Every structure is written in C-alpha cells, then in structure tokens.
Length: 212
Image 1 (cartoon, one colour):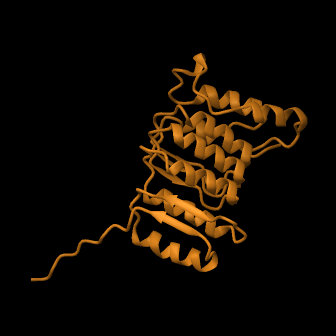
Image 2 (image 1 turned 135 degrees about the vertical axis):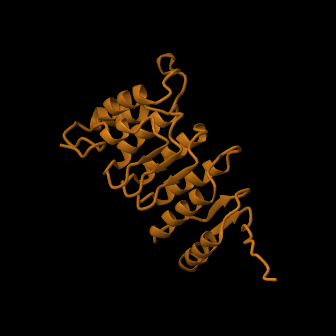
C-alpha cells in the first residue's frame, strides 16, 4: 500500500517511467481548459504516475490555503499535485514541508509556479530538493510577474542549507526585496557554502518611531 497521496510501490516500474516522462504540465488539453480546481488533471496524473490521490488535497482544493506537510508525497506524488495546481485558481498559500519530493518533485513545483499566478506563499522545506530542485526553483523566481516574495526565497535558501553537499553556485532572487531574517540565514549558509552567490533586490528597511 502507499501513503495518502504517495507512490504505489506495488506497480511495475518499466511502463511507469515512460508514462512519467510523457506527463508534462501542459494547459492545452481541451477537456482541462475549464478545470479551475485542477481536480480533473490531478486524477489523470495520479493514474498515469501510479500514485494514490491525496484525500486532504481533494478536500481543500477550493480553499485559499493548502497544508500538506509530512504526507510522504514523494517525487511522483508531488508531480501529480503540481500538474493540477497549474490551473487551480483558489489556492494562495501552499505548504508542502517534509514530503521528500527530491529534485524531480521540486522541478515540477517550479514549472507549475511559472504558470500559476495565484499562489503567493510556498513552503518547500525539508524535502531533499538537491541541486536540481533548487536550481529549477531559483530559475522560476527570475520569471517576470512571479508573485512569490521573501518567504519563498527564504524557504529555497533553507533547502540549500539542508543539503550540506550542495554544489550550488548561484541563487538569483534579483528584483525581490528580502528581510533581515533572510539576510541572517544567507550569512549562515555562506559560511557553510562559501562559493555560493546569492543575488537579491536589497533588504527592506525597518521603520522606527523617533522618541520625542
């Protein structure tokens, strides 16, 4: 059996890989053009990737916040979720902490976020994203009109910190103003990974009242 929303370990792997590779985050299918929740595309993706649909996602598919922490989605479960979120117009805050999505899942989320203009907060911490996932998400943040701000940058930098063997060279958050918490984390990460370059749009100032 598989965890809710996770991968089915009993399926044969040969044809599964082919189906997985052929599945992409596309918006062109006519029967999914009006799939504003993403439920139709999610069920199809789960079937193709041989993963169990996440009941919590289906229950909250029209809410503004989706919290799927510690669900064991895995790379394929995350990819199925990402396929559906391309067209979802309700969810604004997405928490996928600790789902072991790895690089493939992280890349799928990054690709989804290039298309989705409704999600503004994302937590991808504790997911073993590796360099593949971190690079994909960093590249996504460079796309114009992307709504993810300081919180998203912080979580991505956090994922790099968790991967002590990272060979990441650059994280480009140009145009995104970060806060002091991000700056503190950045200094800590650069102590462990001195070759890492982190670009951002500056640190937001703190306004203080002057005592009379």
